[in-house]
Amino acid sequence: MAPSPGTSVQDDPVALAEIELCGELMIAASAAGEERLSFARIDEVLEVGRDREPAVRPLFAYHGL
Image (cartoon, rainbow, N blue to C red; front, side, top):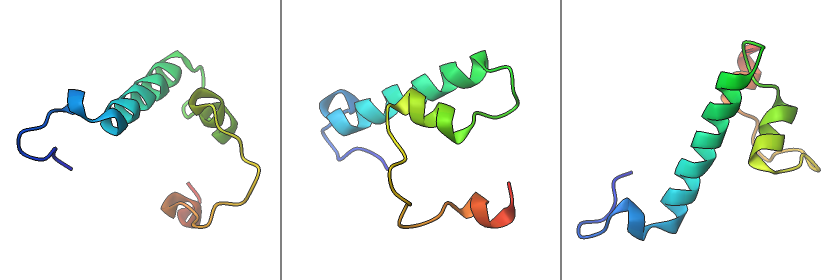
């Protein structure tokens, strides 16, 4: 989604946070020895926990990926 006219990414703290999190994931993925990051490693990088079942399962979960 593009920023509103007259604003920039620097003016959007949510966009900046998302960019930072994506960067952290890319760094972790490039340093990983395995082909994919595990859900546990992703949670660790994003500093979140898996205390509850997500309301919506990711699309890839239905395709066995």
